[in-house]
Image 1: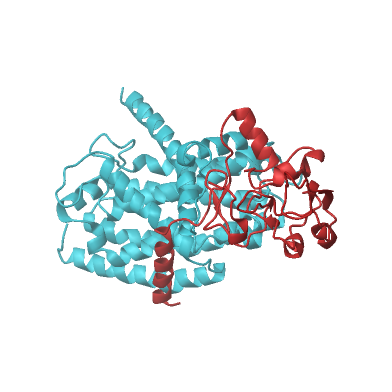
Image 2 (image 1 turned 120 degrees about the vertical axis):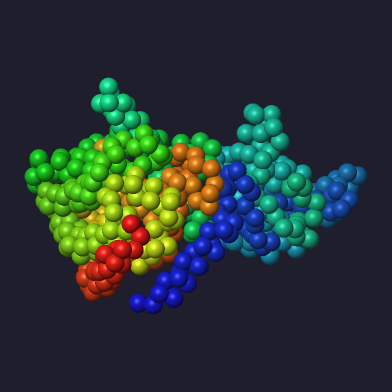
Length: 176
Length: 323
């Protein structure tokens, strides 16, 4: 039995005693996320405000869990929603089916659907897990239950994460 | 009148001691967590300070099961013995000058030993009376270890006692106030005593009596609810009392060091905390020895060292050294 080894063991633990704990007390403190985190989807817009989605349904075709439903419609030339011929009149994602694989993001020809950072999606009813276009567009901050809570409490949406930086494809997403 | 004062002192000490032991659980959990770079319990109250209360409340509302194959009387007696004798030892430890001790016994050191060893009966009875194999193994280990460390513990304390010339703990503190701490004169005795005391408190590296990994929880596997709390507090009580005793015997007790002003309780508390932390630190750092290793170490190393040091001290004192 080596006394030196025992003393060394005491030194190691004492060094850690004075370190900052690595625990993140999550609901009180935000979780630092990695840049490639796969969170809730976001429907992005072009800088001029037009929606990037052209309603091609390639995301729905690529989806392995059949979680996406897209219903396209012709754009009004006078007042277009998207730069292409068509736009997504209905765009729904069932978050209970979604496996957050990111295949939709890869399949999208215009980079319209992007997986964001939000992960607090827990809710009470099956129906509430179907996120419509209004819930997914960049202008909306927070998941459905978060926004509902904020509305009842009359407080701004409290996000449980912090991101080191926003990815370029998520430009225009307001998280702070 | 003197009985009344003693009774009041004892009651105050009991309340303070129970609160201390309750908060030792908090210190233990927070401290161990910090050693493991965690936060520890911080939800109940500020910094988790109400956690001991919540734990106690929870434990008291739990069902207190009596095992069918248990020896009923011994099964009930065991936690009471452990708890009582763990706390009783504190009665002779002086926390300040005259009057700051519940019982200023002339044979205080002897009393502490007698009472401290009684607590092992609780462990042994619990192991035997539970009628289950894991508690039995834990109890047997506890008894086997007792024979080993007890000799070293007793012999190590003889050196300081010979130097001071008194078994009264208050006298020992006053002697140290005059001549300096006994840890300086009696360092080998301190080392032997500290190691043996770790075994007596059944803390790491000698916590094999309640080894979670091998014996579930050792001797108190079959206990729940209030009876379990009694065991748990008794175990921690050993830690508290053992640390207090070491602070008194070797670090000068309540007497202030370096000519600083004497404040009752404060210096005692600081010195006490040193040992509490030391035990916690070792707990977080070291392994658990096998009980046969511990017994071999106690007989082969601690015992000879204690004997030789005792003889040296005796020779020194007999030649007319410090007295």
